[in-house]
Image (cartoon, rainbow, N blue to C red):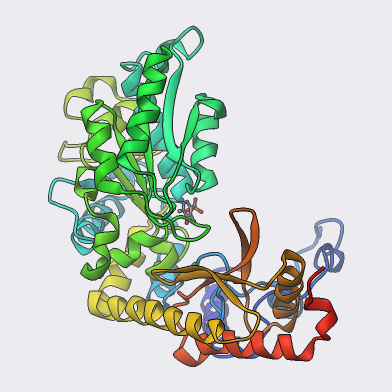
Length: 470
Ligand SMILES: *Cc1c(COP(=O)(O)O)cnc(C)c1O
């Protein structure tokens, strides 16, 4: 296919995309398949001869869409959303056409400069003070890894980069059990070792408190270990837990320890001032990550890390030793020095399009609706006989269960086989619970209220035996 062919087919792709989105409500949210069902439809070996695009296209249409779990479905209430607002999809088409690699300023000046401005727009949007600057990663996982590597090197006074870790002090990091597994992964990959990630006990609200953090640090110091950093949870993946951000940052500062806050999901909600109390004290953090690719509509991948002083991270990840003194603050920024990978996509364009096409007000309205509808769905579910709310809504996330784990698991299976809505599970103090998060960019109140209707129907249509206690 040549570029004239691309002109033809990309118009067809645009029509396909619009039809696909318009028809999502008629599709089951989750792919109703068995493993291997798709792979079996593909030839074992690549073709030697070129194939006509018409054939490739028709195979795509017959094999792929039915094999997808539809993340843009308005009734996707599983995991967290990965929203692609139409304006974001449009920007990504343009980025695809230019297909740049924005590794340094020179290789794509517009990509770098739009990224700088968009990060600052987002800083303002979530209410962080002037002075925070940042970068866009592919994932919160990579942002957290960058933060952990930076905290490690700060603790080692930048010796780890040259000398490696063997023979060095035992470094200790602190987080609560509510933090995402990406924190464990970062600790492992950074050579800290899982056992040196202290899972600090949480209070009845599933929050790490300043006092608990203080006690954990003191115990380590008494044992001759070296505290190196604190990772705070602002909106946990399981039930939306928030650590006491301000308290914990105050303790970390008094102990001379840097902090990184994982707000991957909940950070987007902070464009609404009324939710900022949940992360009160955030302005004292050294590093904050949140994913516009979750709740804000700038499609995957787009994870923003805001840094109170980028110098330490650039010193850790950059390879330009002579620039250390003012690293990250020169007129020309080379963003590869802020992140682990060298190559980088032009991710800021979709933010530019999304923030302008909907405005902060449009985005706030969506998030406020999601939170309000989640509360209504919670009330409708709580009114059903046998249904118990396990965790109350945190923003737009809550969980519910039946009397036994077996009954709850059977219910979840039936809901997802039914296909009108998609929910996933978590464990709360060992109990199997069904998670509900409301956050799809295109969902309506009717879509959200279908959660309780579906659960009610599943409970009624099922013999009392399968949901009864063991
Ligand atoms: C989704 C999520 C992550 C991981 O995000 P990726 O961008 O997929 O790496 C980390 N932390 C929290 C709290 C999350 O919700």
